[in-house]
Image 1 (spheres, rainbow, N blue to C red):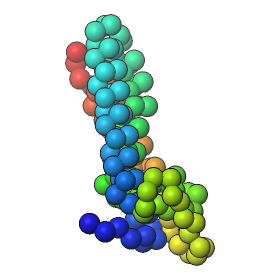
Image 2 (image 1 turned 180 degrees about the vertical axis):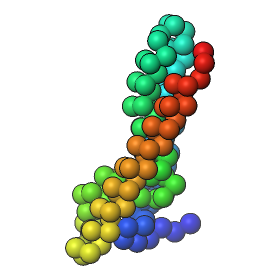
Image 3 (image 1 turned 180 degrees about the horizontal axis):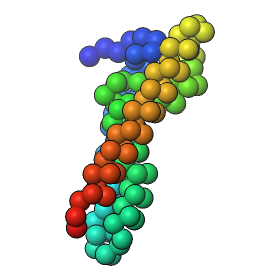
Image 4 (image 1 turned 90 degrees about the horizontal axis):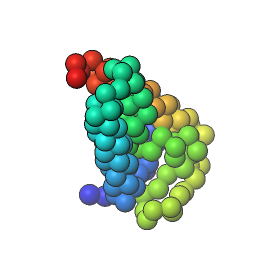
Amino acid sequence: MTYAYVPGTCNLGKAEIRRRQFVALLGLFFTISSFAGLIAAGANQNARFSLFVPLLVFSIGFIQSRKRFCLAYGLMGTFNLGKLGDLTRVQSPEDRKADRKTALGILLQSAALAAVLTLVLVAIPL
């Protein structure tokens, strides 16, 4: 599959997408291990709200990889379709505006997903 920069739609290539998938897996691993630790320690159910942070890491990585769009690159006005670390500046102000709008949308979607997942884990009666 060939990736092309599309303002507000795609600013990542294959290597960058894989990196976001890895971040999502790390967030999932830390969520599961933290949840298990809280259960094993007999922590108060409200302590599970701390799972929001690793769930946010998971959510950001997951949504970025699915959308093929990096929120940090979108905010910085850059994109990367090649090898890791090979950034290109977005030249058009209209394109940068579209990228910022998408980046903020990803941030809000990620926070909402992490909040919902956190509430689910808090609600589990263990």
